[in-house]
Length: 234
Image 1 (spheres, rainbow, N blue to C red):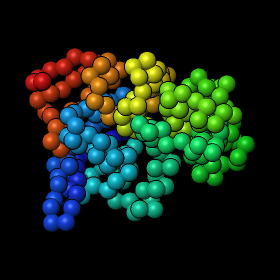
Image 2: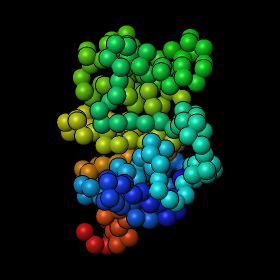
Image 3: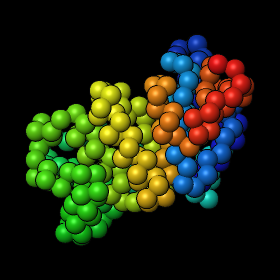
Image 4: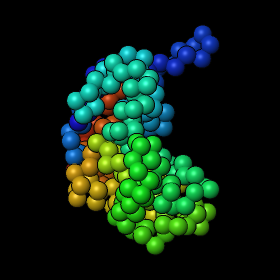
């Protein structure tokens, strides 16, 4: 599903160059729930943003669902994101003036589907995340955990090939964080949804099929983990 080869990202601030990624190579299989973990400033969110086409790498190759996205134009990247990818962010990124159903329907509307079909799809996915009674509520009427579930529903409404999540539990307490992680696990297992999630919380490891550790812009090859069992250095 995801193939990354020698991915590098260099940020230039005046005459200073900062290498956020120094040559990352990785593969993620279809249907995996993969965690991206590492110390603060290690490059894990930068790595996710490159995979999700939210930023452009300095060099390297990214293949998503059989498409070499490294070769796409900006317009083609935008279209690919809409058609194939879903995103969940830590700040929810919901439109306060819209209802829950309207927020979730936005990606479907952007694909040019009939409005009735968009709302039907939004209603269906909101039922799956346990918010069928909140369809016509505004964002400020929801708890933080409910808002994050709305953002997950929005990410899933177009049935993306890959769901990316960048620290989705950062603004939630433990109980709501577990609710969100259980939801990710459910869509991963029940729908075969490929999920790639950045996290810094050690207890989140129990939900991941596999973890890619990033340290100083590189994969930490001496540290691997699968199914909650870590091997190598700590």
